[in-house]
Length: 66
Length: 147
Image (cartoon, one colour):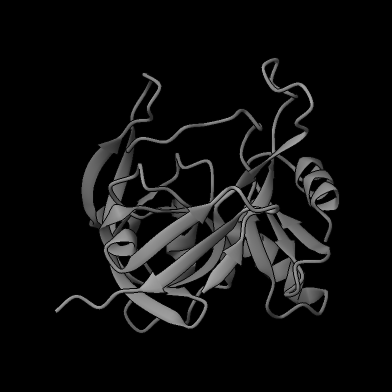
């Protein structure tokens, strides 16, 4: 997946949810409000081993310090 | 192993960097195992040397069989002053490519990403080299085995 395609896919994902990509990370295969929902929906669509990404509430740049 | 950084959206181009439409981030795919649970699916975690610990989103607890609030509690704040959120520590195994390491990792529902690989557990088990001079940027991880 080209960088621009990944950016579009992530920005189109519902905030605060999870997005599931195919195992080669080339396609979005499911969304879910939770990790489990996204995995379940991906599997229902035939993608047994999706790669999950947690989508933040917004795309504000964050610097972490725990 | 050498991995390529992944792109991560930004709200809008920063006024100081108006031509940048997205950022590159040190993101790797990991899985978690808790005790004898089946592993999670691969999910993305940020490599963050600024974090003392590995941190994961609390939404991963249920599928792993972790009771979130049974862990050791602390409060987590960001570098920008603001509200702190509770984080609960549990011992998990982290799978990264063909490597596996154990970490006392914090879980929090306040985490905005799926995971953060910090110093304890991750950086103490890998020699990490960031190369932002490459396009795209890369990260090299060499497993170190402490004696």
